[in-house]
Image (cartoon, rainbow, N blue to C red; front, side, top):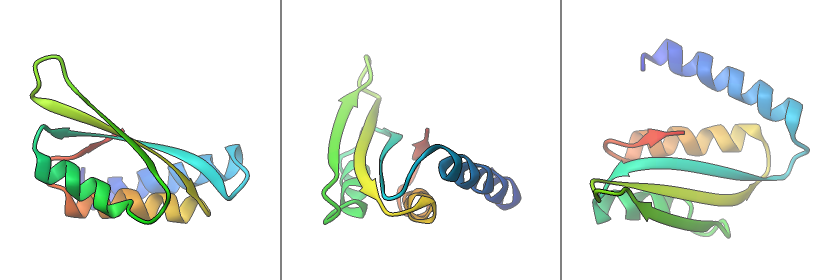
Length: 96
């Protein structure tokens, strides 16, 4: 995704989060990464010390792993910052 489309997406997400939740609030992140312990560990480390509940599940053929993270976030900006951080740090990640 281009940088401009990224910002447009995050602006829209921020508006939706502001309109649908009272903050601080629980938020469920979902990511898909190629099954590789290094990438999964990177995602987990980004959410360290936040009290996140992290679950992983391999795809049927084992090529990909979905990572679900349920965590209490203080505001929409904090939610978006974590998406951006994962996108920068983790190779091949898909954010859902």
